[in-house]
Length: 109
Image (cartoon, rainbow, N blue to C red):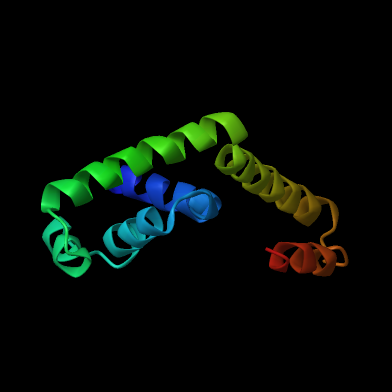
């Protein structure tokens, strides 16, 4: 369950601007602010079922965006390659001269 929540949060970070304001509100309340379905329903003056349905449809949309655009997958691949590069530089440059450049690159994100 935690893996699913982390994945949805990551996808939401990448694709939230492609969602409607209502979808963004429900996702933010549920996944980021940890509101229950009932709390969201009360805040938004809708039924609990409406909140549930909206969240499920939005999750499907986020996965569809990822299938087409693959931004999250590419991000994960970049992180892996960056980690490999960092290890290789540390082995090749024990004095750490290039470590400063790598640190600047790392802090760009």
